[in-house]
Structures are given as C-alpha cells and as structure tokens.
Amino acid sequence: MLKKVFGSAVFGVEATTITVEVNVDSGIGYHLVGLPDNAIKESNYRIAAALQNNGYKIPGKKITINMAPADLRKEGSAYDLTLAIGILAASKQIKAENLEKYLIMGELSLDGSLQPIKGALPIAVKAREEGFKGFILPSQNAKEAAIVDNLEVYGVDNIKQVIDYFDKGEPLEQTIINTRDEFYKNLEFPEFDFSDVKGQEGIKRCMEIAAAGGHNIILIGPPGAGKTMLAKRLPSILPPMTLHEALETTKIHSVVGRVKDSGLMAQRPFRSPHHTISDVALVGGGAFPQPGEISLSHNGVLFLDELPEFKRSVLEVLRQPLEDREVTISRAKFTVTYPSSFMLVASMNPSPGGYFNDPDAPVMSSPAEMQRYLSKISGPLLDRIDIHIEVTPVPFEKLSEDRKSESSVDIRKRVTEARAIQTRRFLELDSVHYNAQMNTKQIRKYCVLDEASKMLLKTAMERLNLSARAYDRILKVARTIADLEASEEVNGSHISEAIQYRSLDREGWLG
Picture 1 (cartoon, rainbow, N blue to C red):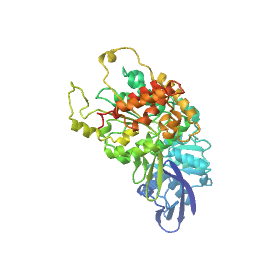
Picture 2: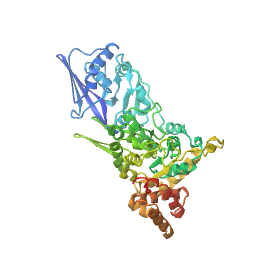
Picture 3: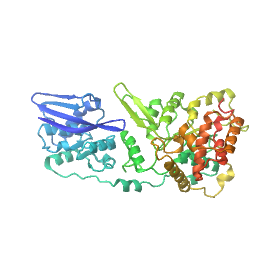
Picture 4: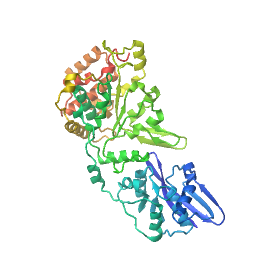
C-alpha cells in the first residue's frame, strides 16, 4: 500500500515541501531514495527502536521510501517522525485518513521521545503558504512555529501522541501565541546600560550618532580604555525592533536552531566572534550552506574585537556584504542568499603593544611593527567604516565619582526620533532606510552645504590630509548629527563635528 506524508527542507532562509512516499509491498528489504544524507539513511535504526518501544514494529516486507523532489539533497535527522508515521500508515498499523493535511517533522530518540529540529519558523511559513491545516513537531519548537497565524501548530513530546491522534482520534494540544502581545512583552530592556560607563562622554556621543544613522564605527585605544564595554552597550540605544524585523531575524536564527523558548526574538542580536574565526564561519557557507555570523547579526550589531588580529582574508570577505547588505553563497547546483544588514563595530589597539606615542608605556612598538600591524586592515574595508574614534583611558577622578551617567533609555529616545526623521525622508526608497545606506546621488540631494560649510570642509581636508574617501563619510555623519538636532540643513557645526570622527584618515595613522 502507498501512503504520502509531508515534511520540509530548508534552503537559505526559505523552506521547500518534501513529499515522503512510502510503499509497502510483498518481499523483503528497506530502500530509501531521493538523495538522503547519512543522518536520514541511519533513521531506520532509530525508527525501529522507537516503534518497538511503543508497541509497534517495522513490517517484515519490502519497504520503498521516496523523498520527492528526488533531485534535491535532504539532510538532517528531522525526517524521523515523518518516515515513521508513513511506515505505520502504509503497513496499515494505524488509520490515517487526514495525513495529507499535516506537515510532520521531528527527530526520534530510541524510546520514541522527540528531539528539537532546526528551521521550524521557515517551515511553518511554507506550510501556511501551501494550505496545510496543521504542523506537528517537537514541543521544544512549538512556540517558534506558532508565530505563524492561520496554521494549527501541535507540539508533541512522544511519537505515541502522534499515533494516537491519527489512529484513535485523541486530541493534541494546540500551541497558540498572540504574536504581537508576545513581541511587546519581550521588549524588556537589555542588561547592559550606558549609565554603567564612567566618563567617556565624547565616545558616548559618537555611539549615539552611529546608532542614529546606522553608521559602522571603529574604536581605537589602549587596553582597558573601555572599548569592549562601550560596544556591548550599543544595542541598548538602537531603536526597538519592528515586528517585521523581529520575524526576519528569528527566521535566520531558526535555521541554525538558536531560537530561545519565547519564540519571537525581540532583542537586537549582538554577535562577537573570536578573531580565530574562518571565512566560512563569518560569511556563511559550507558543503551544505548555513548562515554565518554576519547573517546572525542581521538587524543588530557585529562586534569585531581586536580587528588587526583577524586574518586578512576574513576581513576582506566582509567588504561585499557591508556594501550589498546581503550575502550570496553559490554552489554548482544551487544558490542561497542570506540577508546581512548589520552595524559593524570594530575595536583595535593603536599598536601591537597597545600603547601608541605614550612615553610612559610599558611596551613600545617599532615603526616597522606598527606598519605591519596596521596594514592588516585594508583601505577598502576602512572605506566602509564611517566613524573612527580614539578612546582614551578614564582618569581616576571620573572612575571614582558617584554621579550616574545618562541612561540608555534617554539616549535611545533621541536615536529613535532621529531614525523617524530618516524613515520619513527615505519613504519612497526601498533600499534605503537610514543615513548610512545613502549612495552618492542621495548624499548630493540630502546633504546640501552652504558656502561657509564647503570652505570649512575644504580647509579640513587639505590641512588634515583627509582622503577622498572621507568626503562622503563626513557628509553622511554630518547629516545624522543634523537629524539628532532635528535640523533641516547641514551647517558648519555639524560638518566640524563629523570631521573629528575620521582619525584613521589622518597622516601618520595608515601610511
């Protein structure tokens, strides 16, 4: 007898429905076809034990299972439950009239209990699109899948519950989540707050500008100056995620199985990979592509601590995603695209020893060592970082004072207001949402300078030996400073403040 059961495969951040056809015929043998990987080929051992321990068995007949479309590679152990229910239905051990109305996924343990799967959210989205009535999956993933409305989601702990549902009509408990309520309930404030940072008012101002315009930023300073502390607090002043952004971000984290129990992610991601990371781990890819760190930080912050310690090849692969805000991974048979619109925050010591031009420094570096250290960061990568700021150590007087600094809540209000101005400005543009995304044409349109401001910028570029690449960056940052003041025009004070944030363009830093 032939039975069809439905599962799903995830490619990129989209799912594809897989039809599992199970045919039980006279003879002997177990044939699994349709490009399964080793994890799926081994499933018959898990299924046999799980059924045995729950009072059922794999029939001693010829079982042929086809996973269609047969030319698409399937991977992972999430098809165990799909195959097991298909075998039981095809061998008439259970009644299963409504089987084709459900999408079934789950990894089996030997006792029949279910282990969580990856990609529950994209699979649920696809199931609703294709008109399935319900989605049966492990209870650990139920909240994540229940984000999708107009789809019945049933979280189960054991294969016996699924068998009893189809065979005896015993009800399963439906997981229902009010997505909006759940989202706003989880919008609590991040644990790190700017009020913890003593002193560093100039750097906080810089962070506020970066957050308001979505600008990439690099912090340069000696060890212990507070670079990492400041970077970790940046997400706390970014505007709260919208529901659309939260869904988009949750989808990517779902693919790698990193969604917490709450289902929808409400906090912006903050990713801080170690400097030994490989190109593939950062950008994504592998034999069977997975999202990398830059996609996991989509709609959030990617923090690269000790930037020159990263391999040069790793830093170079960042260039294209920083520009396009997505990363495309091509293989001979397919291509996947992951979104990667993130804020890059980098930090570095000014020299290998950590202290630059400091006569009292415990470690001094020679000019040759300095050059070798700084040459790891290429000009084109720096070209994509709008703000460079030097971080100096905080004096004891500041550290010991009791006065509370401004909290993240107050700074976030100003940032959100500035972002609202930008949203209105770029309303008709699909690809631009904030100032950092402006191209040359938009800079010319929205950053018009009067004669005095032009002269100020010209003088600064000549005096400080600023490169041509700094010109557009200064205008973008000046536009954001003007937005924070709710000013229509970009004036001289905005330009002069933006010029301060180009430390690495000055002569004496990078050749």
